[in-house]
Image 1 (cartoon, rainbow, N blue to C red):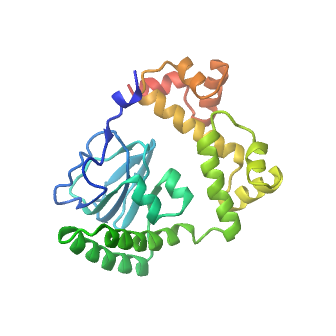
Image 2: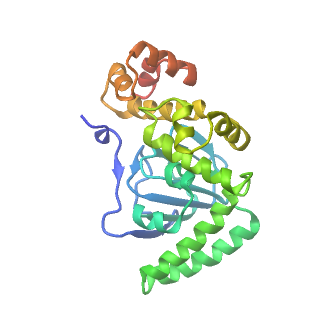
Amino acid sequence: MSEEKHIPVHNLTYQEFQLTTLENGHPENFNDVHRHNFFEILWFKEVKDDSHLELDFENYHLKSNHICIIAPGQVFNMKLRGEKGYVFAISREIFQEICDVELILTNGAAPFFPDYESRKNCQGIIKLLEDEYHRNCRMNLIKAYLKAFCIIITEDLTSQEPLLHDKQRIQKLITLIDTYYITQKETRFYAEKLSISAHHLNDIVRISRGTTVKKMIAQRLLLEAKRELSFGALTVKEVAFRLGFNDSSYFSRFFKKHSGYSPEQFKNMND
């Protein structure tokens, strides 16, 4: 039985791009745990004191002017309580044209604050987007506006990275981990792919992200394990084998070390 039978997958059915608002009848049903097969940008212009969303099992308290980017495959849940803001639903193909930040293409972006100048510029772009979307809907022009919007908001996300070359290596590392994390769990493999030493790669990761390559791989494994255990029909042993663990007891120790719960406890919590 596939896990899609347990996690509803929301699709972009007849358009490559949809622009709607949170307050004016957004077509997607937010009120369930679900995944997308597209990218979604949420700009929460006004929220309630207790507004929050859940993204890949992490709970985020929302504040006004938070922006969140949800990538395909991420597990998302939010109950709307009268929040106001914008929702962009963007096909994978268009998003890959307008955004070149691997970190976001792979993992989306948890709620973050653009600075005041960025918000002001983005508001002007959205006005242009709304006019074009509801009148002529010329996709080349819409893509240009979306690209401008993404450049502005992603600059805020990447401005803290130390060096451009190291930033590019980190983005490439994230993509490599997402591709190989089940079969390749050693730092040396990723260092060789990036043509640097394992020691140098760990230095870059430690300085720019405050962690290690091993921990990044472990967090990616843990996330997939949580997805499978929460919504899939697989047993703990089946999840262990699917994620490349030959010994289910070792998988259980790994899961508890990184989450604080045994796989069985976590599975029961989400039944």
